[in-house]
Length: 80
Image (cartoon, rainbow, N blue to C red; front, side):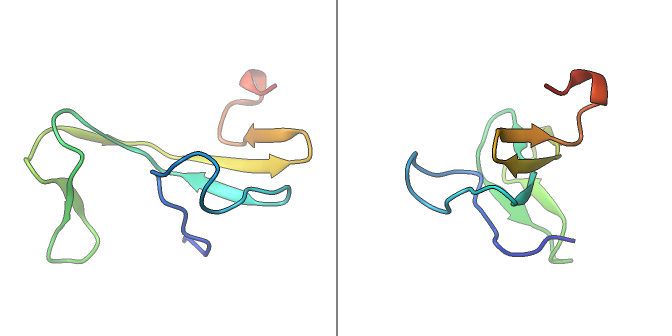
């Protein structure tokens, strides 16, 4: 379940929501081979590429700390 704030995957550096220690983010990028446009199915939930190309969706949970960002969904051995 996602909660506010909803932060877009796109934007310009130095603008938008300010990340600060204590935030927990779910980063959910989409990867598409030939378009950047998504369409929503009639169910109101399912997303597809506008062209029907192959897509992939990934997600990481990231904690913003006083020392920077920590990717919580990485194995312990891969964390800094």
